[in-house]
Length: 87
Image (cartoon, rainbow, N blue to C red; front, side, top):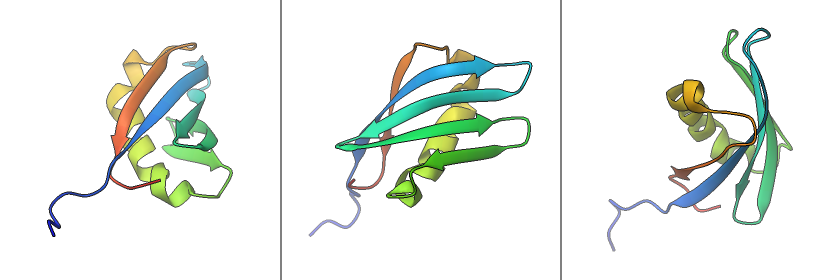
C-alpha cells in the first residue's frame, strides 16, 4: 500500500461578491456533494465558512487558494483547486 499518495478532491469555487473597499470576498465552494458558503475578510485575515459540516477538511485549503489567487478572483468567476482529502 502506497502511503505517499493522499486522496484528493477537486473543489469548485464560485465568487459571488467582492469589495476591495471593505476588504471582503464572498462565494461558495462545492466538493463532491457538499456545498459551503464563505466570506473572506482579507484585511483581517479571517475566513468564515458555513455550514460547519466538513469545514475542517476544506478551510485551510480554501484559505491557501484565496491568498494565492486573490488578485485574480472576480465576481461571477468559477475556479477550482485540489484538496488533499477525500470528501
